[in-house]
Length: 289
Image (cartoon, rainbow, N blue to C red; front, side):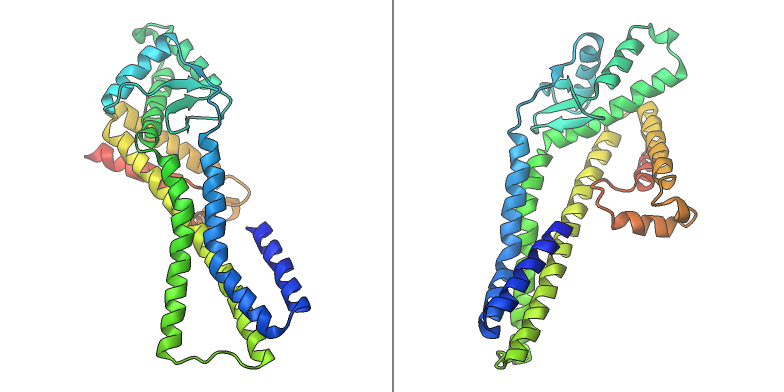
């Protein structure tokens, strides 16, 4: 976002210093209408390229592979590969497979090497947590959520621009606004167009994050609907632990005693996931049903 603002500022200064006020206003007005769709196309293309990256993970084997089969069956699928690779946690790859971190697979393999009656409560909780997380990721693969975000990267900016253009045209028609005639009027309108462009960029970016959080919420609900009580309890506890990590971070430490302020601060963050406290509360609702 900051890089975009800098780029726009430089190119606006160029217009203001090199051409007449009339030509400047026409150019900026044209740029204001075209920028969001162009940015949307670029963002969509960049995300689409991630779907073309070769899957360099390794397929899970042995007990972990055997464990994954009933998880897929519970979710109504059979042939979604489980992998492990160079990532921090559970994720999806190419909208075709589910991948876990190597240390997660190592932990599960070590647990499955024991007989069920010999496993500790903490180990059973670890297995239950990973089962719920795997079901969450399976939802993303089933519904092709990376591709859904590719589409959203284009249609959200295009929609914001369309709404802006329609609103501007409607207001100009209703209030019979006249075309600027003097240089000062052209400059004033150009400044308003620039400010409006920044507002549209912010609205577009926030809408993308809200959409991403919506997809994550759907995946959480899917995991809850296909999990047993032990998995739900572990899922909720995992979110609560993550919430404490957030609250103890530098950004939230000073305001962690004010839940509403924490949630508003998190809402305006760039995290594509919902607030962990809300996710835990949603899981607990399923526990009560």
